[in-house]
Structure formats: structure tokens, C-alpha cells
Length: 246
Image (cartoon, rainbow, N blue to C red; front, side):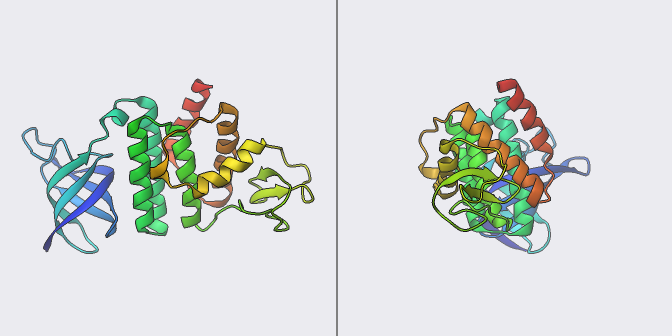
């Protein structure tokens, strides 16, 4: 085994034996890798506090390709303390980790790592976890091979007179192709496209009405159900949080 140093985000953790954990770590260089954190559940272990989900750090490991690597130590870059101390924030962050894990299994990309890192950093800074989650959900559809049509009408290809979004038909609907699809606001139509093209690390403010966020979430939830085949446990809890907040 070779000693390597790699930046990564702990996506999930699983107890192993009486005192260890297996960490699933998303890295930019190697995609998802499994790392054994030996003895980290022992009270006196130096790895105890850092061998947990939702932590960004530099991992020193005995690297083993296509098998479990072994953890030597972690230099913490961001522990996301504000996220893990807030129920709403940690719930959205958990959804992001679960979603990215599913995406990476299908289509590993360094860009996904950057998106997750930038999104978690923005949530930690205090920006809306709900809106940031919607942005990355939309972007990740491309990596799942089911990006909706948000540049032109999904029926005829026209870029003019777009009047609504249809998850059933796959995106924008123009006036000429409109049948009986539900209407959404003009703001929602504009923002859904902006969400896809925006660079998350450049976002400094998110001031969007509840009505528009609701319409975007409704579209994304239904679109994921129809086209991705993913079942995300965290999504059910998020839906309950949305009900409480509204």
C-alpha cells in the first residue's frame, strides 16, 4: 500500500467490529473511496472526533486501489459545526450527501465534488439550505443523464413564449405546445434556468419568495420520482420540514 494525502468529504460512516468504522469519502482525485478508521470508536483514539459523516479534511491514508484504504490521520478543513448543530441545515446536508453518493456510483466526476463542497460551505455560511439544495439537485440531473429541457420548449424546441414547466413532459413548455399543464410563475421559469448555470461558489445572497421555492421544489421532486429511479431516505424527512416551515 502507498501512503497518500487526499482532500475529501466523509459521505457516510458504518460501524465495523467493536471499535472501528468504515468511512465512505468523496474525493476529487479518486471519486468515492472506502477508508477503514481502525479503533476510532475507542474513547482515547485520536481518530474518534474526526471519523464522522459531514467533515471536510485532508486524509492521510494507506491507499489501496479498488479496496479499503486505511486511515492514518485527518487534518480538518471544515467540521461544519454550524450545520451539525441545526436540525434543518443538517437534514438538507444529509440529503445532499445521500444524493451525491447515488450520483457518484453512476457517474463519478470531479465537478460533483466541487459542487458538494461549495454547497456545504455556503450552508455553513448561513445561506438557505433549501434553495442551495434545489440548485445542486437540478445540476446533478445532468450527471444522472436526465437533464430537463430548460433552454427551450421540450416539445418543439422554441425559445420563445415559454409559459410553464412540466415534469411529465420534461421541462419548459411554450405557449403553442401548452395543453393542460399547471402554470408556474414567470420568476420560477427564469430561476430554474439560472439555478442550473450559476456557479455555487459565487452565490452571496438568496432572496427568493416561498411561492417560487415551492414551485421549483415541486418540479424537482416530481422530476426525480419520474426519471431518476432514486429513493432517498432523507427526502421524506425534508418534506416534513417543509410542511412545518410553511
